[in-house]
Image (cartoon, rainbow, N blue to C red; front, side, top):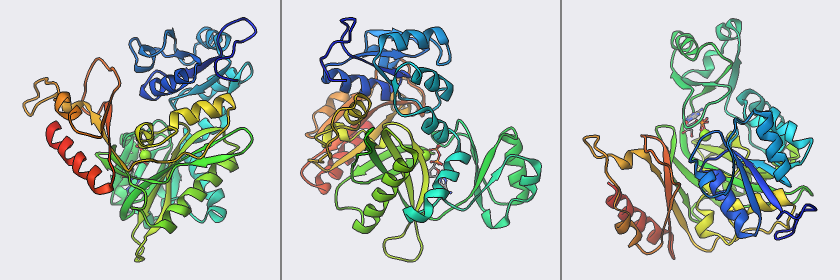
Length: 394
Ligand code: ADP
Ligand code: MG
């Protein structure tokens, strides 16, 4: 699907996206840059993606009439939201090119299936998941190995930003936590001594070609990504190389098409570098890759467009060290809980500050309202600018 070409009906070549969040918005912007028309299917009004896209199909993700419209208008379709019903992607794939596949998205939606895939890849990848047990039944709860305590009980489905997780120290706490989570299928994972968290973004084309960004380092606060540091050379080279090759292998074993983000823990095993553990994956561009918009010659969103449209993939080159700060809803409130507006003028006065706001109409604590990427000529300079930005934002 070449950009700027017309479909047989005379319509411009159109790329569709399921989901109207900020990832959809940035996908649409990258597609438009290459001359594609776009359509967004999203149930909510005023979503970040629909604001950027004249063709908004306002329908539920499982609404067949809405999906039919999307299929009619689009030449190829992707998703920005991993909790779309996999069935919707399967249905669309019978009519149009769809990437990533329903099977890959279904796997990433379910921690049990995801960990099974990681375990299957572990030997070849040289890295596996944290020790874990599946808890779907009362009997599995009773039989949970005490070696997994202290641990984290995570719902198999629909968890994000630390939601659907409970830390447990004893068997009694585990039973109480499973009840509180509604007795739904869960995994119990051992609580690991984290030295750091990393993620790797790979893009894989239909022909199996894989390109990647260097691993970036992530800092979470209250289970939500707070900061990503992408300063080449700041991670041990061996660790970074192992994370990249494991991510490429995980994508290849799935026959994956699209941008895939694989998250890793670095745990303290007594060695200087630490050991890698696979945490989870996201079948789409990822918050930890937003810096690529401003610090790389090809962004993760453009790579998503290229994989979907079957365009050539090129190895991205990072031209500047970068640090990304997530802008969460609490910045829109002062210490007394009164609404306020952050001082964007002061932030924009910082050289190397790239502000991205998603156009969300309502700020809520924990809600991702935008992000700020700082670029500069050295890691040191980028960190200094980030500190200055953080001081302005308060
Ligand atoms: P989510 O889907 O909410 O992102 P994650 O499994 O990535 O769920 O967990 C969120 C965060 O909780 C991780 O980024 C990490 O900081 C912490 N965490 C998760 N699992 C473990 C673990 N086994 N040991 C230590 N910390 C963990
Ligand atoms: Mg996570």
